[in-house]
View (cartoon, helix red, strand yellow):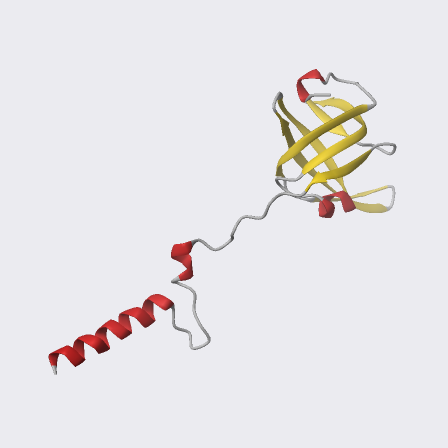
Length: 136
């Protein structure tokens, strides 16, 4: 099933999509029990829809992961369709997002070593010392 095929109040939804983004985690207390919820934005080649992530689901999945929603339910809130797993549905990981390098090459030169100096500072210092030698 594709996102564009979803309609409000549709049940038994089975869908594979990528998590484009995950919003802020909100904590709540209902009927004396605390919990957490976050809204993820799912996308496939046909569109986008919001998906509610509950409690441990928030920690299991991340941005860029491809997931499969099994036995989901589509509801409508403030004119927007939302997908949820409710009590009977589930979310399965299809493919974990590939991690990108977190340090950009130009940032590498600005990292400090254990003496507190960056690679850039060491290079400038070495050039200064070499210039002094040339002038002597």
